[in-house]
Amino acid sequence: MVGTSVGRYVLGGQLGVGGMGVVYATELDGRALAIKILHPERVVDPHAIALLHEEACALERVDHPNVVAVVDHGSHGGIPYLVMERARGMSLGVLLRYEGRLALGRAVAIVIEILAGLQAAHSSDVVHGDIKSENILIETDGSDTIKIIDFGLALHVNQAPHVEQDREGGQIAYGTPEYMAPEVIRGEHASPASDLYAVGVILYELVTGHRPFEGGAPASILARHLEDHVVPPSLRRPDRDIPHALEQMILRALRKQAAAHQPSAAAFAADLAAAFPARDNDAVPTDVTEPRSAETTTGVWVSPSSQLAGARPGIEERVSRYRRELALAIKRGEPDEAVTAALAVARALIDDHAVTSARLALESTVDELTRGEGAEAPDAPEPLWRLLLTLATLYQNLHEPLRAHRMALAGYHLAVRWCSDLGRERASSLLARLDRRAAG
Image (cartoon, rainbow, N blue to C red; front, side, top):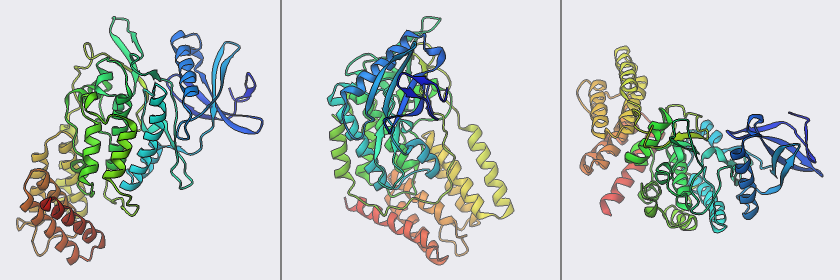
C-alpha cells in the first residue's frame, strides 16, 4: 500500500495496525499526518465503515492537547479514511514493556494527563470505549506529554456498546478484555465510568508492572473482572512504598459498580494530585519480574450468558515450576536464585488471592536458607533481605503489625551487615511506612 494515493494523501510507512484498520504516515503541505484506512476485507463491512465514521465524528467534537486531533475524513474510490495529526512518541504499552513499571510520581503525572484528555471527551459527550496503555502515546523527549489515540470504539454517553450476534445467536461486543469495565462486559450502557475503570487498570499496571486481571483466555479474564477481587497494589508489589491514599484511589476506580467510581475524570485527577504529592525521586526496584504480555489487542468477546463460564487460568503449573526452581537453587547453594524463585512463588499465589499460602511459602524459604535459625540468623545470606521485606509487607496486610515491624527490622540489619545500600534504603522506607500506619 505504500505509495498509494488516497484522495489528496499518499501513504507512507506503516505506523500501526489494529483490529479494524491500518495507520500510515502521510503529509500534506509539509505537515506530518497519519491516515487510517480499513483493512481490505473490512471495506465492504457496513459495521466497520460506521465505526470509522463514528471515530471521525467523535474526534471532531473533542479539542484538547491530550487527544489526537482529526484533520480530515472521507472516502476515495470506495476506501473510507480518517486523517489525524501525527502524534510523536511510543505507546505507553511499549514503554511498560521496556521499563516494567514506572516511578510512582511519573505514573501519577501521566495518568493525570490521560484524565485531562478524557474529561474533554466526556464533556463533549464522547466515551472512548477502548482506553488501554497501547492507545496512549507518550513523548520520548522527556516531557512525558501524552496523546489519547484510537477512538475507533467511541460512543455517545449512555450509548449501548458495539454489539453483534454470532452464528449461534450469542452476543458479541468489541473491546480489550484486560481493560473492560464490568458493566460493559454485562452488556450495559457505556459511560464515562467505563473509561475511568480502564484508567484504573492503566494506573495499576504503571505502579505494579501488571494488569489486575491478565493471562489465560479472554473469557476467563472477563469473568475475573466480574467476580474476583482486585489484589491491592501493595500486595502485588510489596517491595514498593505505595502510599495508602494512592492505593485507595486505584482500588476505587476498579470497583465492580460504576456508581462507586470517581464521579468524573476531573475529580479522579484532583484526588490523585491530592493523594500523591510530586515525588520525582521515587526509584523503580531492580527485582526480577515476569515479562509482560504484549497481547492486549482489541477484539471480540462473547456474552457472559454463553461463554464466560470458561475455566480461569490455574496457578498450579506456575507454582510447581517455581517451586522446582527454588528446590534446585537451594540444593546448589545459590541464594540469589532461591530468593528470586521464592518471590515468584509468592507472587503467583498472591495473584490468586492465596496471601496466607504466599506467606507460608516465604517463611519456609527463610527457614531453609538459614537452616532453621530464622530471620536473625548470623550467617543469613545477603539476598535474604528481599524476602524479609516482602514478608513484612504481607504481615502488615494480614493485620500483624508487630511481626511486620520485626521482619522489616531484621531486613534492615541484614542489609547493613552486608553493606547493601539498596536493601538499607528499602528497609528504611518500609519501616517509616509501617510507623506512619501504626501512628495513624
